[in-house]
Image (cartoon, rainbow, N blue to C red):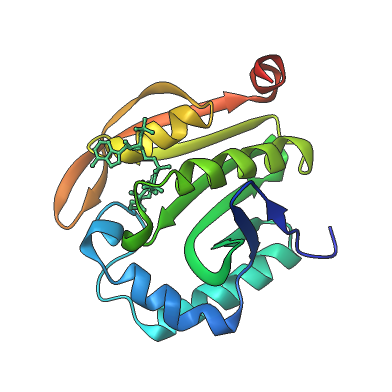
Length: 183
Ligand SMILES: CC(C)(COP(=O)(O)OP(=O)(O)OC[C@H]1O[C@@H](n2cnc3c(N)ncnc32)[C@H](O)[C@@H]1OP(=O)(O)O)[C@@H](O)C(=O)NCCC(=O)NCCS
């Protein structure tokens, strides 16, 4: 894939991260409700962190390692959230992750974006398996994954440590054959 894909849903557009998104990313991620549920992010989240994320997304795309999307509404070009799929080509599998800025929660945006990225993974990247990890206490994300078709596969006890607390981590996955059958 030589040009970064733009994915559309009924209400959303998923596109590449741009350096002009850095301040929005910093503002949206600087909330304990967001970073507290992300295994690889911590507070404070600086402008430099956001800029590094954007630069990394460009390299990762160039190497076919990850597709990291800004989520914006079709009605407005402001970034409201983020969704990605990280590819392990040897295994034809991809890990999805996402967050939505607090002012935009509870409107079905994460579900709409996750479903579209799952479709992108199977149709455009020809993945065999799409999966996600989520801290057990994160009921909202579990709902999103289930609505995107992923199935609970098991729990890793104390699978991660967040803010000095061991957290159980639930695994969700979806195989290409099951996704095709369910369509
Ligand atoms: C998880 C997250 C992305 C959901 O975003 P969203 O756009 O509000 O999600 P949606 O509106 O598509 O759906 C959320 C679902 O969870 C439910 N939900 C939302 N908050 C909830 C909560 N605190 N407890 C239980 N369920 C909750 C909603 O009711 C909805 O389910 P339903 O449609 O069956 O009613 C958002 O809360 C977020 O960014 N959280 C922090 C980062 C994060 O957890 N990322 C995922 C890491 S694995």
